[in-house]
Length: 259
Ligand code: COA
Image (cartoon, rainbow, N blue to C red):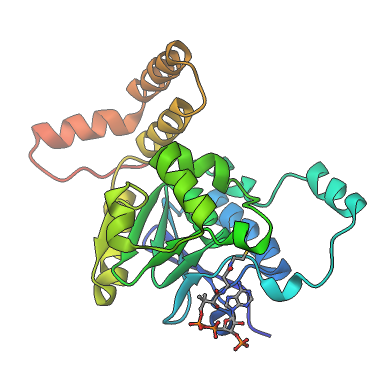
């Protein structure tokens, strides 16, 4: 049986691939189980410094929830049970390492929600991005309505959620939904280069900078400033800070240990 999610490690990078190309990598129960497992495994592996999420096949990053599983209305006890457990998307929020979403082709619904839970979104110029849920009589369920306005502002978020329209990669970059767009043929190389760049930087500075910026979305300014200074104080006591300064003085590339 093919694995619904692949996890491959190379040069400090964990490549996590949604692997249902025949269904445009739609999120079924198997993917929702395997994806957080892959994220947690990469997060726990001391050899991994950066995670990349991508979709298998030519046509899609992810077409969202598997509509073929929408055959019956789930019972209220089933939903209550789901709420008792941490949502599977929580694995992204708990990850301290940077996560890159490498988006090509279709990126709809839950696919966009997953990418919003990542830290940097890079897209191929063929990407088509949208939230079709309201047209199906439902709405986002794993953070889309909360994360999208934090990334693009309320106006663009409401436009996307209420119209369900798909936007191009160029438009997505215009509104800040993705920060990098490259030709389709260059997506893999550009993603690998970005991941390698992050992997060569001091891991603790990556984790704390991520925590601080994500904190900015949830905290009042005073508390956020306090968090920033606390995290900086911790970084000032790391070996990697000294290594960066030594390498600068010695005019050589730094070699960070993560300590
Ligand atoms: N769930 C389950 N299967 C999906 C899927 C989804 N969300 N999206 C695509 N697929 C499957 C199709 O059923 C088809 O498989 P089949 O031939 O075995 O039926 C295959 O992927 C290719 O899709 P197809 O619709 O033939 O390609 P297309 O190029 O005509 O359209 C999409 C592509 C993505 C625009 C279209 O499939 C679509 O609108 N999908 C639903 C997206 C959506 O609403 N997601 C949010 C759900 S909340």
